[in-house]
Length: 308
Image 1 (spheres, rainbow, N blue to C red):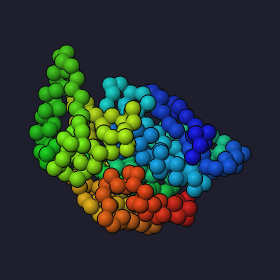
Image 2 (cartoon, one colour; image 1 turned 60 degrees about the horizontal axis):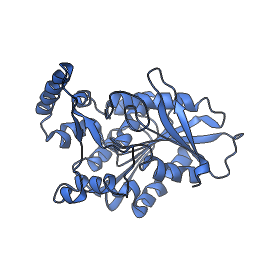
Image 3 (cartoon, rainbow, N blue to C red; image 1 turned 180 degrees about the vertical axis):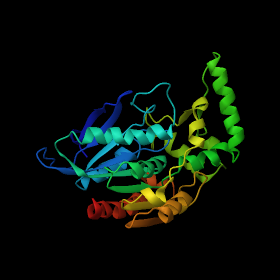
Image 4 (cartoon, one colour; image 1 turned 90 degrees about the vertical axis):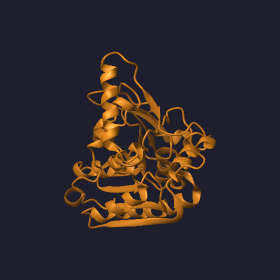
């Protein structure tokens, strides 16, 4: 895709600006109305990693306007302090991105879909339960951040983790410096022998394969507590009615996307839903590896074509 087909956008909110890239289809004609797919990046990531450069580009090439945005507190979006993964805020961001899109003359406001990768998949699903302007939902290795915090990110001891968060927040309130933790080992070599998701996340985020200036993979410890009380799939049996396409790899890891994908496929009220299992591939293979990404797109694009 030519850089001329990528437009930077600033989404205004009552609190700060959200940064987004708009990917335009070949032969873009601003007098036409186009279907739109909003793409949501992984946890601790940014719009230039997989949601934009891989899936956003592919959707634009298929004739969609694709919009990849940075979550609040992350990437080039506003929000202080930095490196906060706030599930409620991330879900709310979708509505402000849609508010921006419905003002653009080339957007068909009745044909807006979402596609999230990793944590962005869980947030896309959660957003769709209450944001009825979202008409179709796609999830690629979607992760329920609440599950992740209760399990791998807390060593399966969420109460101990919450006690540590509480102590750190009290310390900061009394003047201590914030503690920002790197969620991954510092190098591929340091990750050797760990869980497949940790190893492959490090290989993606800590090498030229996926590394980006705003792809921080860091987290402020004192601001994590809210995520422990959050669940991406709350009320899915009642409120998630949009067509849903769920893509997972069948090589499971500690981050739980295989399990979470099967769970939301089962629980969603959606009458039209599709489960795609990329056999022999892992969570991070579906970020950018050509073969598994093709499996995902070969399902997602026809699904959007049919339902959006």
